Length: 325
Image (cartoon, rainbow, N blue to C red; front, side, top):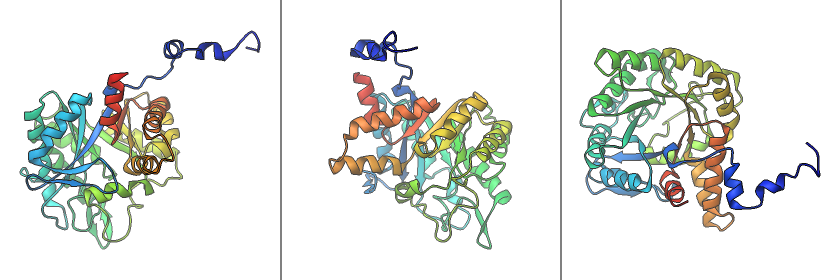
């Protein structure tokens, strides 16, 4: 193709033509909204590092989910902040904990909404790590049963999907086995398959109260320098029964999203994480960028990279715009 016979601008001449030849379409149905649920009543704690987001008590979570539904968001993922924490995170599998109660509240408010639950120990342990600590090191195998118990508790409360985010080896297989053994073989697993040890998680740790008391998570979350390792992680999770595989974070790892989609041709989720959200919000507040336009361009880039599903704090805002377009 050579100029002047080929003029790419011909197909950019009007909004109608541009839409006709558009290669990637972003839809509200692609989006999942994270929600933080806390004990108590009439609690709506603002998360200062994530403007527009809050910790909600169970009595308010149904209303927030319904507002998201009415905006066009059809799925939420829940993160719990318990009243009490201990060394092994027993509150994670308390049937009266914030997440099981929130599942029921959302299902009462809007039964059609897909409710996904994050399964990890970090919000529930007193030390803030994602599993059982032995001599300062997270013990992989003794954590697996706890994750299975947490997943089962969520399924029993009515969760539609389980999303383990801990990055313990073998956790997808353990959760699948426990769910199947207890009559929940139809509950799918969306695994955080390639979850990197990232500096972009800072605001989330404020929201979930999950900052490690000491050390870091580099011994179990992935090294940001590695790409081939992510393929091995994804292959392991698919082999253990994952129904959807996730890459987290999204923007610094668009290459990983594309590789996962190309190499496995499997449903792929991407997590547009708190740091990515907060940077856009902060720059928009300063007047340095058009926050709305950057939000939509960001989400489109994640979809274009190969993600079928995007978990994002922008979900409600973006869905409203998409609904009106």
